[in-house]
Amino acid sequence: MGRHRSDGTQPALRLVGGGLGGPDGTPPSPTRKRCALVVDDERQVMVVICRIVESMGWAAAGFRDPRLALASLERNPGAYDIILTDLRLGDGNGLDVAAGAVRLCPAMPVVLLSGAPLPATAWEVAADAGVRMVIYKPFRIHEVMDAVRSLAGGGEDRPPSGANVAVVGSRKQ
Image: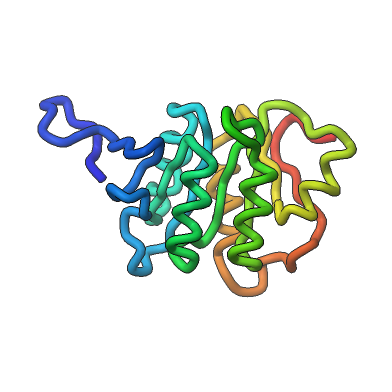
């Protein structure tokens, strides 16, 4: 994936089929560089989250369409180490992404990003869908980094499936 260059010799970010990554929507390097699947229908937010993850030495595959993101996960179930998804997506929602991801990869940690507090009734649905953490927008860079490290860092800090959902950000309830 090219970086932004002022001389225009490399593309900024390739959006292919609504996502960032290879021509078929595959992650940039599935051969074992740790990789995050990022889903947000707002392009700028998706790109920022991808850049945060990349700054940690990871690869990131960004998608604006949740169906394309899940299709990529289905084609490459072992390619991703964590999913970061917005709650409200133009053609779906992050809870559907979480549920689909956990159905394909039961141990997959999922982080839900939301611009509004979750209603009380949504917490159980989020936990049942596989969401391990909620980060409220506007988020801080370190909040995304900490989520990736704590949930996908491997080892003992990974909470068991069905654990309580952690909350990060200023809109805690």
